[in-house]
Image 1 (tube, one colour):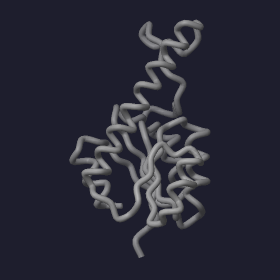
Image 2 (cartoon, one colour):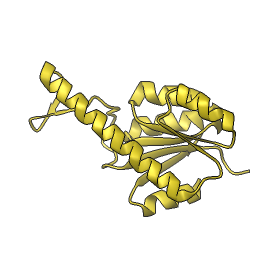
Image 3 (spheres, helix red, strand yellow):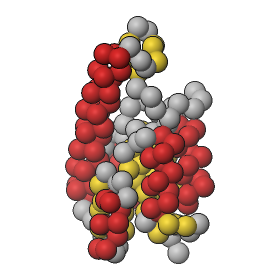
Image 4 (cartoon, helix red, strand yellow):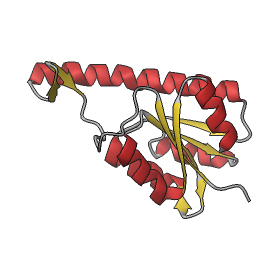
Length: 153
């Protein structure tokens, strides 16, 4: 977890990490990250359950990490935006994170356009904002990432 955090921070991301499902959902609701990176194997349950919870509550893009090749299909079918098999190259992690966030921004822009055409969406400074996980004043400025991993043994 520490290495991934340092690599992402060096690339300009604001990273908040936690261990397990409960901590990840609470953290995501508190900071409203732009994306999440989660491990399939968590100390308090299956990462795919966390994937469902994050998508339902926050609608953020999620990347799943696992050693098991079979987890890739399960994660992608379960709604993950991306999957990386451990061990992975950090350059690949960064490239996939950048692509995932660009795709999410494109989708948010389309949603804003659709909302404006229908006259819906929240207004802020005269602009329509996407419906997202809005909780508290600690929301990350762009490129925020929430990570949930299994602790090192």
